[in-house]
Image (spheres, helix red, strand yellow):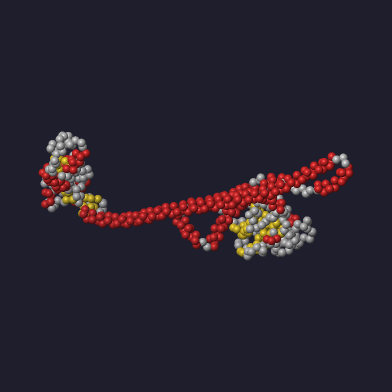
Length: 605
């Protein structure tokens, strides 16, 4: 068989222009060979017709013809190169033939009897040697020889889990169980096949899980993008709503100020007219005083006396100064601060829920939102009430004291004005200044409120029948029937676990757990009174749209729209009552608990 060294050098059969095998080889007059297309393209791009190798110039472009002999030689060389492909020189990592001289060819087989590797040429003598065992070429044949007996390792000792030669079976492994390497290899292959099968199953499972996770991540990404868009839309709508309400508020305040300014200007014009008339008449009187005609003075004085009697309106100094007061800005600031606090609490709760919730839990919660029953809704409202009540306790708590002079004869007020007790017998001494409630077991607080917000708490656990609320200062205290809203009373009655409000208010009695302590919150400008079960921190009821105060005259109305003091507005007073036949029942006014939310969480409230 021809070897690689009997063939021409490979570089001789490469075109020097394209550095590839010749295609349609042609020869130049100087004797060099090129691909026909290569040399033609080279001359087309050059101004001089010359050989790329020796740079010999030609006066005219030679007429090129394919060198058929050289082409046939190239084809023959390629066929021989393909035929001798197995006897190529070894590359790094390949097993060389032990017989070939340098350079060695790649081994085709390894003989375990000869302990040598052979290329295809040198392997031919072994084809007829049946006792020689050929395997795929391997290196490090010394590892296959027993170092003790210098024999091939042909058996596998199952006891010691090692390969041994046949002499080892007679020496160190006489009583051990040994099998030929082929059998041990087959058994090991079966085991490896089972392991690989299990690994394949695990790989498939992992691959499936990875694909699912990738799909889940992609879906989560899409969901997150939709969530971001929806959150942006929600907050954008909220900003639009707040902007619209701000515009409405500004428009309303401008209208009020414009109306107040118009009335003030009219009043100023009227006073200026009166002042001018008064100046004119004063000048007439001064001229009369300068006269020395007694008869003239006496005759003119009666008619002038009638003209001097003028109605002096109260000075408008207070009204004008009140226009400059920023009462509306103060109301807005106070309300916005409260809204900001409430929104802050809500956003903190939302951030906490999002931070500590798993995606699966969030998904379940989102799916369950459409299936909330009444109890779940009540719990949600109770949680919201918890935040609102805490905010009220921190900002609107007041100190309330009972007014003993307004107490019904069946009621006893403690010396400190904080405890109200019911007694069986009636007192018979006359009322002082007609301030007492004659027929209803009520008592008022010492302080009334004409504006703003206030909140107080009352311990009701020691009374079976009680009533709490507010009344206007002008309420008829000799009324024999239960006062209604039309009488200026907003009251909550309790009988054990049953509650109801003024009978004139369109609401039926309802049942809730019996309260131990009740909080009463009143927003005069907002027209709201709410009653809270302080221990359970839930809302018992809330009355809205209430009109607590009325201005006493038209001048007071002008004061209100111009930002004047509310001193002329009707006051509302906290009212307390115990009814029934149980002596010893009592109500106790307790300090408002202003503990912060963080402290309540620590204490487990």
